[in-house]
Amino acid sequence: MVSRVIPVDPFDLVIFGGTGDLARRKILPGLFRRFRSGQMPEGARIIAAARSEMDRAGYQQMIADAIQEFGAEEKNDKDAIAKFLDVLDYTPIDAKGKDGWAALASMVRKDVIQAFYFSVAPSLFGDLAQRLHDYKISNDQSRIVVEKPFGRDLETAKALNKSLADHFDEKQIYRIDHYLGKETVQNLMAVRFGNVLFEPLWNNHYVDHIQITVAETVGVGGRGAYYDRSGAMRDMVQNHLMQLLCLIAMEPPSQFGADEVRDEKLKVIRALKPVDPHHIVRGQYDAGPDGPSYREDAENPRSFTESFIAMKCHIDNWRWAGVPFYLRTGKRMKARTSEIAVVFKDLGHSIFEGDEKRHRNILAIRLQPNEGIDLQVTIKEPGPGGMRLVDVPLDMTFADALGHAEHEVPDAYERLIMDVIRGSQTLFMRGDEVEAAWAWTDPLIQGWEERNDVPKHYDAGSSGPEDALMLLHREGRKWRDIKG
Ligand code: NAP
Image 1 (tube, rainbow, N blue to C red):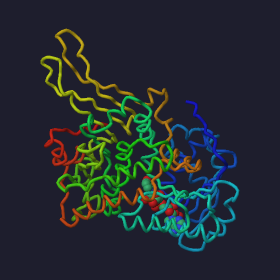
Image 2: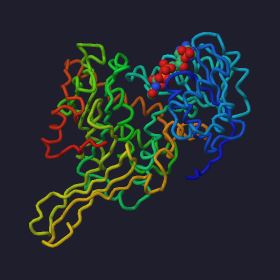
Image 3: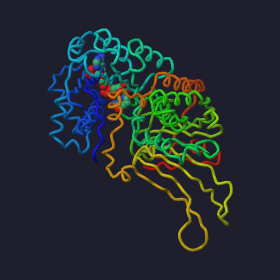
Image 4: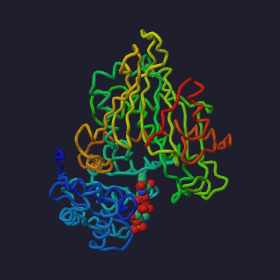
């Protein structure tokens, strides 16, 4: 596939935490793909910074190895790799001390776009912002990119926002939620606002309910102790699932601009009703053939943290009054899948004799795997025997429809980083959005902590606890199957 190249101006991208897991696994391999597809201008430079003592050649080798480990077929393009490595530089720095800052100041150019990616623990965000300012490295055009988790509650999120706002304007701050960089998430907006078909039906007159599922097959082993302080609500719902909810539920923005889109998302978050505790099911996976139980993974035999959560939410506005939004996410589930399903209402009346089945149109937007869209429609079953109706999928995988392989679709990180360079904030979270999301989340977490709610058990490799199935069953609804 030939990429459509949108030119960007020369830039210096400084990656704090350039030796870390995220930088080696996602950021640098992603930047390499953009470089290879011609999206980096002449004169672009990437400067990695971390405490490790290393010279430029050492860092280039580290990234050459990372591309081999984490890259796809582009890792065989030795010529492109050599040219990309030439763009990289490294400088040792201590985010909390004085070491390395003068050297960084002398490296970063003043006359090009400057972006500073904080790929470090959030506890260092304030230190980095302060030193970029004190050492006069950044200016009022510089951009900073920060990673999740953005706080663990409203109070910490406000403190983080303040530590950045002390030195940077909101227009300079890019809070990453990599779900927003996924091709299909953007397609959600294209489908809604680029077609005449769906928008008239996108309301409580026609939509019965909406399901958002993000299921993972992996457990928390390896980062169990870290995860145990967070849980599925903080790790997934407060950010990724709420972002998906916002995009599916928001009013049409007047244009696809950063503030127009984010204003509409914010209204959705603010219209979310508090959730009835009976409409929340939390779970922990048991040991299975593929691994230990959640509590063993978390190294906490008395843990009450959830590795699974399902809940029924309501948005208190005219469009969605009475329409349940069911959210579900968990670890060690039966398949890895992320999907949003808009389940339309039954036909009020069937003209076909003997047709007693409740036929429903369902628009399912698959984020992974096989990014695509599937519209369930009802047709006549072929053959004799009268008008027997059957539900079939109108299934479109983007890769097939657009004639390219899945690996050619830009990864979320590479797309988002290039948006930072272009100065487009549409796919990044604004400070007030993050705070509003925590303001909705906090009382729910406090509620189950105060009640000492014990998470339900579920089998590893299942669809979650029985109670989560009941959440829909008792209302005559059904979760969609979790399929990989
Ligand atoms: P990591 O592997 O622990 O890397 C942390 C980086 O920070 C290392 O490069 C480390 O290098 C550097 N560092 C630590 N202390 C420093 C200091 N005082 N001064 C300068 N550099 C320092 O963490 P990570 O997994 O890459 O995560 C980075 C950020 O991304 C975190 O906020 C994390 O929550 C977020 N995130 C990560 C992922 C992921 O998949 N990994 C996904 C989503 C979000 P030195 O030890 O050499 O200093």
